[in-house]
Length: 275
Image (cartoon, rainbow, N blue to C red; front, side, top):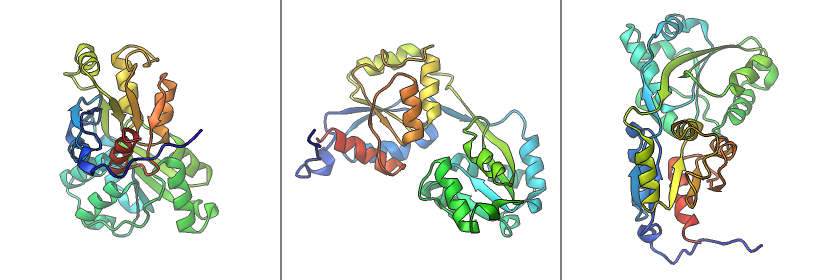
C-alpha cells in the first residue's frame, strides 16, 4: 500500500480549513490545543469529557508533604499534579526550597516547564511520556535498575491512574508512595444529547488527550463500544496508552503523533486531513 504524505504546498493556516475538530480536554487546559488547531484553520468545538476537581480530603498528601525529607525522588506525571501539589505545599506552610535535596522527574515538557516556573530543579524529563519510558529513564539516570533498590519515591497524581510505574519501581526494590493530589470526573453540565448534537453537526474529528477522556465519554453513553456514537468521525489520540483505551472501546484510531504533545497532536490532525 502506498503511504500518503501531506501536501506541503498548502499554507499552514489552510490545512484544516472547513474542518470541525471536537476537543475533549478539560476546559481549564483546552486553550493551548484550541490555539494550535485554529492556527491550521480548524473550527474547534470544546466539549470536555473530563473535569479536574479538588479532593474531599488532603490528609494523605499533607502527610507526605510533612515528611518530604524522607523521600529521594519526587515524580510529577502532569501539570495538574504540579498545580495541586504546590497549592497544598503553600497551604500547609511549606515552601519550594524543601525540594532542593530531592531528585525530581517531570513527565512531559509542559510539566517540566511548570516546575521551572516555580523555580524547581528538574533532574529527569523522559523522552517517552508513558510510564514504561519513565521507568527506563529513571533506571538510566541512577545507573541501572539495581540502583533503584532502597530509594523512596513520592508520586502525587490523580486519584485514579495507571499502576505500571509504581509497580515497576517496587519490583526494582524502591519504596513508592502514590498519593492522590486531585481527582477527575465527568463535568456536571455534560449531557449525552449535547455531545450527540455536536457530533451530528458535522464534526470531522474528535481528539482524546488521556484515557480518562475516552472512558468518561463511554460512561456518558453508558456503553463499552463507542463505535456507533462516533461513526464517521476520525479518532485522534495523543499517545498509544490513550489509543489503546480507544480501541478497547470499539474505536479505530486513525491519528496518533510520534511525540505525545499537544502541538504534535494538532499537527498530526492537520496532516491527516491533508493527505
